[in-house]
Image (tube, rainbow, N blue to C red; front, side):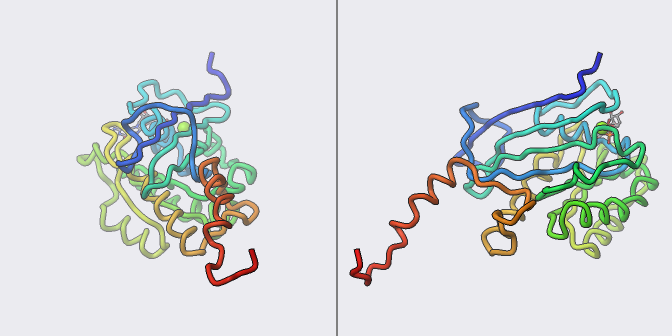
Length: 237
Ligand SMILES: Nc1nc2c(ncn2[C@@H]2O[C@H](COP(=O)(O)OP(=O)(O)O)[C@@H](O)[C@H]2O)c(=O)[nH]1
Ligand SMILES: [Mg+2]
């Protein structure tokens, strides 16, 4: 019997190294929380990518996702700890019924196709439109050409997909949920881009549905800020 809700939680905090694959498990404390989606055609390896990222191993049983698949992990991105809360489409993509509520308030998305299936590549434009209209026009998307390990059966070239990514202003990587290649990098690259946009003011975490929340660690810093920012030339206390 498959439980309808599976929830993996792994908390890591690595002060010196970017990433989250090694380190000591500790109580959760983070600067930001980002809501992430994994979208794309059925069978492209979305659930395996999520599993590889959270558990650092390939998901052997290929039973279709039933119910809600959800995972979270704290990673270190450019010196900030970021909790990624990642939602998997849970098999709904088979029936083209991925709901508006699934997309709502997502900050980032992995848009997955299978490099051995042109059919999954041809569906990318539809997924991209859904993400931008149902989540947010500002959603940060990384295109993942998954099953990179099956190069002999490739139907979509790297160059073709990178051109598509460039034209649509999204990032691009080829991944393998089987070997783990570029899986963590895909989440980190997307997170890095979201952080840069927060720092430049292009993304506002306070905007409703931004998919970004402040964590404990950053709230503590924010409450300390007024003292640090006090004008040294002001004599008014
Ligand atoms: N060779 C290879 N097979 C993969 C990879 N990722 C997923 N698969 C296989 O592709 C099938 C679909 O994977 P799944 O994660 O269920 O796809 P989803 O429907 O997009 O969630 C399964 O049989 C997986 O074992 C990969 O990177 N390499
Ligand atoms: Mg799935």
